[in-house]
Image (tube, rainbow, N blue to C red):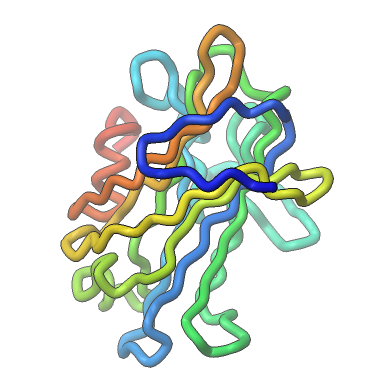
Length: 204
């Protein structure tokens, strides 16, 4: 049975191959339409990425072809990013979901944590300034066993985030070679650019 986490809570992860699922619900009738984009940052002990490819997002310089399509991948191959799902809401209820695959056996030694974020995205760019996470409901992050599909833990973000354009959902981090997950749930008003400046400023 999955463990439901609260903000700030930590849990030890006893598996190596994980599926990180981020989900939410937006207003399906919004004009212009909008969704969330998921990004991952593989950080060293300085709190920043060492290589440009360790910022894993929809415009990553390094990609691979998978059955789901072309997906971004980290330099060491341990994190395979999500596929943008804007416009694939089959039930037309505003539900969205993106998955990130993580293989901790491939993670480079210098990587001390992997941060999972989401930011407001509008296909034509016009909604990027208009919308905030105040128009996002039922946001969550779930950690699953990639092999069995079993859910290990889940964190439901229950804050309003009315001024935030980007949210740090959670992070995997290691201490003494043991990997743990922490539920973060922190919102920021700078959008994806805030995280780039925080974690990848030397590549701007």
